[in-house]
Length: 219
Image 1 (spheres, rainbow, N blue to C red):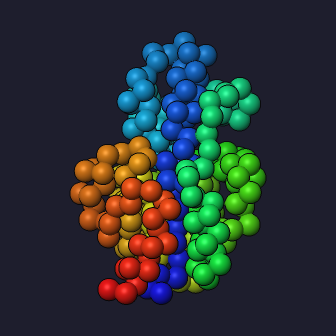
Image 2: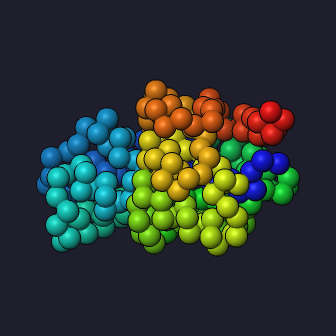
C-alpha cells in the first residue's frame, strides 16, 4: 500500500451536485436583484469556499454583500431547491471498499460544514471518513491548510497522502501541500486543465479507483 490516506473532494468527485449548485447560485442572485451569472461561470467556481466563490463571481469581497449572498445560497441549497443530486455511480461502494482495506479516508471540500454534514447524513457515508474539513473552517482551496490539517490530525506524511478531485483548485491544493494527486475527468473542470498540475492519473469514473490503486501499488 503506497498511500495510507486518501482524501476526497466532495462536489464533482463523489457527488453529482453540479446542477444543484449552479441552480442555487443563480436563484440566490435573482433573490438579491443581482446580474445572474452564466451557468459556465457558476460551474467554474465550484470547489472554492462560498465566500471566495461569491467574490469571484460578483467582483466584490465587501463583507455585508458576501454574507447576504452566502445566506441566500444556503437557504436555496438546504431548504428550497429540488434539483436532484446523488452520489456518482459506484462512489459509495468505492468508499466502503477502501475503508474495508484499511485506508484512512477524509474529505476536503469547498462546502460549508452544514452542507457537508447534510450530504454525509443523506448518503450514509458519515462514519466512513476519519476526518472532514470544510472551507468555512479554514482557508479555501487552493490554499493547502485544510489538507495539512487532515494530514496532521491523522498523523501521516504528505508523501503518504493521495488527494482526489475534479477541479484545478484540488490539484493546486495538493501541489501546495506536497501530496500526491489524482484527477477525475467527469466533474467540473476539463481533464486538460487538471493535467497541467501533473496528477498521477485521471479516472473516468470513481469506480475505477480501487483497481487503479492496486495497479499503482504494483508499479
